[in-house]
Length: 110
Image (cartoon, rainbow, N blue to C red):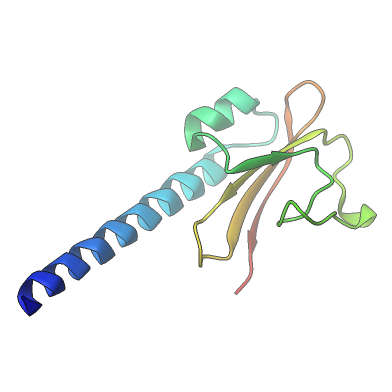
């Protein structure tokens, strides 16, 4: 019985590690390949659907506002790609009113 539980737990851990690694790979590759001037469609093709969207005034945690000095000029839509708990990492992409990427950053809290 202990062998079965051990194999099951090892399998679950392997699946979780593979999932986190695949997200990090996809999000990291998209961050490197997506340059300013890209469109939202370009980003969605590279990174998939965002974890959440804001209007550019919300912080890393969408329940909190960014201080005014952190607002990106022209940003009307910000797409966030968040790593799952407990990974404190977000990839942010700000788009202007024409859907053009005007700013991006990788937030990490380690």
